[in-house]
Structure formats: structure tokens, C-alpha cells
Amino acid sequence: MTDTFKSGFAAIIGRPNAGKSTLLNTLTGEKIAIVSAKPQTTRNKILGVLTGDGFQAVFIDTPGIHKPKHKLGNYMMKAAETAAADVDCVLFIVEARDGSGIHPGDVEIAENLAKQKVPVILVINKIDALSVERAHVLKLIKGYAEAFGGILKISDFVPVSALKAVNTGELLDTVKKYLPQGPKYFPDDTLTDQPERQIVSEMVREKALRYLNDEIPHGVGVTVDSLKKRGNKDIVDITANIFCERETHKGIIIGKNGEMLKRIGAAARFDAERILGIPVNMQLWVKVKKDWRNSEFMLRSLGYDGRTV
Image (cartoon, rainbow, N blue to C red):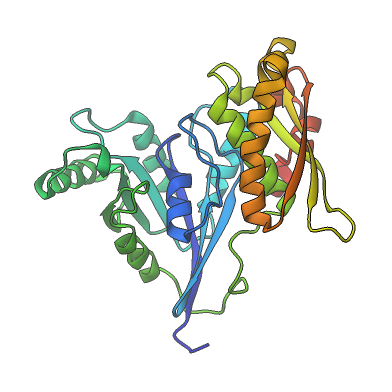
């Protein structure tokens, strides 16, 4: 390692559904954080590690900034707010809003970031969703610069499409500018700090978000009770619980003749096999825990422990 090696931390912050987790996955080149079209998918801080020629960037994905309605929401906001502390730069993600002005939630985030005194890269995401010419992109940048001018100092502006990896190379080069010289924090082959059980539980929750209707997903939590190799055989046995808040939701998650639960399990098993590199036998159970999002015991059981934020 040379004396010019750079390493550091970059927090990814923004409103729900701004594309934070998609950006993390694109930058690291691996699916580290689960994604869905539903807001508030990310509940924990998630580290994604990218080690390249002469640098190591540790990205911290955070829950979307929103007004909490229960203890889980309070935990998520604490995770997001503390992520901006002690990092080398912040990637503040906003959406390329065509003619609809600056979202009030973005202004509130800008006001909070101004207190942190850390370099902020404004990432204008989803430019692929617009009929964007260069002149229009420059207009978007100017609009955000004017909106945040009296609130927050923006160090750099980078328009991207996280979904289609447009301009993400330029964004990575921009991040590198703010990384200090120093040693690696993680070995070269490290992609994330999440334990295998946590990764698998999030994969199951992602499939539930994908296949269930809008009334249920935010009331779903997943724990992996067992994850172990079966003796000398090349297979991993996984047992996981899907928690919901109502008996009616349990029936929907299981589905007619168990079809919905089988669908969720098959999709989650496919991802688990890709990550673990070995065949997986997955058993899913559905349990009802009323109002679990306001239970500190259940939040700790599901890995949302405010003491670790």
C-alpha cells in the first residue's frame, strides 16, 4: 500500500424512494441493500465497501427521511440522522423533478445537513426518467443551487441515474476527492458489514415487499432463526419467521394453498444461493405480533436496536 492510498466514509442520505439503496448497489457492483418501489424499504444503516486501485470507499446507506409514526420509525430516523456524523462526505440524493419544484422534504434535510459541517455532494438522481438534454440538466442543477443557496453549502453537483448506472463513474471520482489518505478499514474482499442472517432476512422481506399489496409490507418484519450447513452436505438449511400485525395479513402472506408464501420463499432462496454460493433449503413461517413496530422487544429481536445506531 502506498502513502497516497485513500480511504474513508460517505453517507447516502435523502427522502424515501430517492434511490439511495439502488445507488449503493450500483456503486459497489453488488446487491447489498434491498430495493423496492415502496417507500421506507431501508430500515437500518447498511455499509457497502468498494475497494479499488488506490482507494477504499465505505458507503453508508440510510433509511429515507420521513416523519415517524411509531418506534420503528423513530429508530429509522435516528439511524439516518447519526449517519452524517463522522463521515468524510455526504451524498445528498434528490430526484430530478421536472417542473414540480423543490420538495419541502429536501429543504428540511438540507437544513439538518447544514448543522453537520461536512462536504455535501448533491446527487440529482433519476435523470433517465426525464427527457433530459444537457441544458435541462444544467437548469435542474441551477434550481437546486438556488433553493439550497442560503441554507447549505453544496460542494459538488452530480446528475446520475442510479438504476441505469449513468454518470455513476463521475460520482465515484467526486467521492474520491473527499477521502483522506489512510489505511484500509476492511479486507479487499469485504462487500458489507452485515452478517449472513441479516442479509437473508432482508432478502425475504424484499420479496414480501415485491409480491404483497400496499397494506401489508410496512407491517412485515423477518427474523432468521437458523442458518447452518447440513452436516457434510453442500446445502444450507435456513428457517425464517415473517412477522405481521394482523391475522388477516397472515392469511394474505400465506395465500391460497400456501402459494404466496411459496412464491416469496422461492425468490428469496434464489438470492440466498447466489450470495452464499451453495444450495439452500428455506423454510418460512408466518407469525402474528400485534403492533410489533411499537414493541422495543420485537424491534431488538428483528435487529432494529437503537443501542447500535
